[in-house]
Length: 382
Image 1 (cartoon, rainbow, N blue to C red):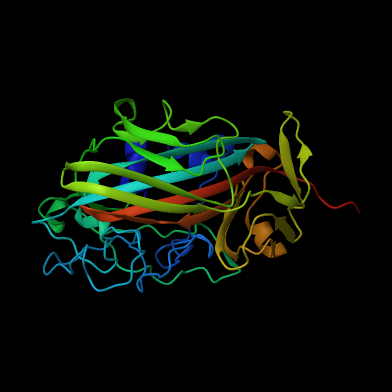
Image 2: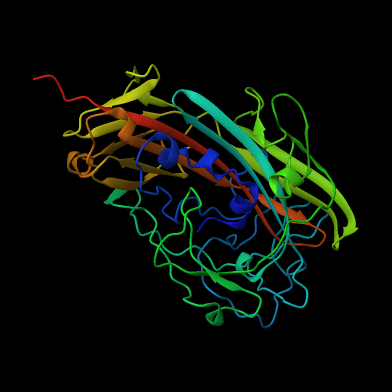
């Protein structure tokens, strides 16, 4: 399910350009099991806090939770970084009498048609029942494996709002372009973003960035007019740190988040060629195994990958170790068309960070790096 932040930001296309901008891609590479790192996420060893929580962060599995006894979101007995701030308990349940505030922040970098589009945005929402999720379910794609079709099964949590909690409504899931997905339904709480004053983030290549409430982006926090960043602003293999103080507005005081952005992401094999419209494309034999190589992998995290054509598509979940080969029969299943604009290869690297703060009952810090290539069918020479 597209999380609330994307509906608010209106920027989802920047991180999911594979389908809408590059051709008819109906497959989603996000398998729901990628990047299940424990809090504090993917902060590298030299930058990580001294200790890590023992439970995983909430995920996007759409199930209703019991609104009964709250586990004590800000003072439960679990390890937290030594920031002098309370941290949300990953095992806490939603407390309707004291919901607190949900903070979200994302850094994204999408490369397509040889050009990079980067963004950074965040914000605050009244915490809702759907923010408090159980641990990730087992991934239905095996590691270093692929399946034919989409990597994310649709969910029907509800059919009518009567099946949801009193404050929720039953709405359909949406695809990357915001279009409703038929035969789906999830329980969501209507809510609006909060203006809690600005916060500042370090780690950017061009210096500190100040993020503030942007009415023009439905209340998302941005450092530019629309959240997109000028070329050269992002730094890689870097931990970003954001801090602020809402001075008890909506019960929020001091807060801090840390988010590690991995090294730069690029395909090194097959080597791209210039397509008929003047932008780089990847040559792929539509009847042979596809051996992919890329940069920036850490060898331990996961990567989602999809290959789609006019007549089909496949989804893969692979170790981010710099190389993976898609078997020939699965390349054939992708149904590559004769022209590059219809065929799309997308590789997506996602990482999570940690959010703590006074009055912050739930936090979500994420980075998504995506490579989107049009694929030129290039049969091997006889």
